[in-house]
Image 1 (cartoon, rainbow, N blue to C red):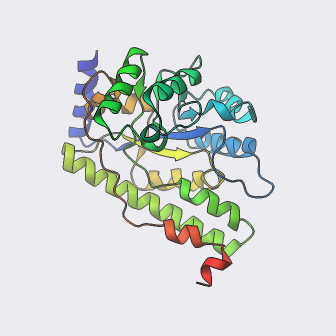
Image 2: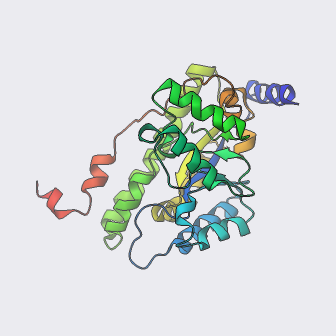
Length: 282
């Protein structure tokens, strides 16, 4: 079965099939600051509506259970939409500063029925120390988890806090919108180039997004932009059937270096300064 899936993936690439993206969303039920008047449920509802309108199949949402009690609505809405969920750690712990035993306990505490045994490392921190990394991979394998990789990202989270500050300034919001879509386009091209350099072909790309207010605002335009650029959409499970993800879907295997996520342009300083008069005056 696995051999057939790998063969199909490689034949599709060889035939010049349309490149595909699997959109995934971290930090359910809450990510980043909210502009005045917006709610977490409103953000989740807008994201769900955009995904359904664009007919994106089975987008995964990765859950931090520590935040669900304070606002259970977004997770309930995600599940009611029929979208799958995954484990993002109870408290969004960073493996690089958390003891292995505590980190694994955080994963276990966050395990819920229906998580599909997919785990996404918070901060994409898989362990700088090889022994730490291997220990966590072993724990994941023992629990039947697959690692949700990231092979396309443009740092979407950077825009959410800026939007919360700038929501009342139409000119600033327009800057945010243009730069967000430009960053997404740049990152898509860079990820394709990185995949071709390593694998000699397009792979199915796993896109990292977050359940933030600005993501919700821009998602319809973002998905339309990806389609204009020639992408289709797929699920996380289908994407990671590709042999490029073999060490992620089976953490018992030795890890391989992740596909680079090239940063074409650093929007961080501009976003950090936007709608901060004290920064503009410097």
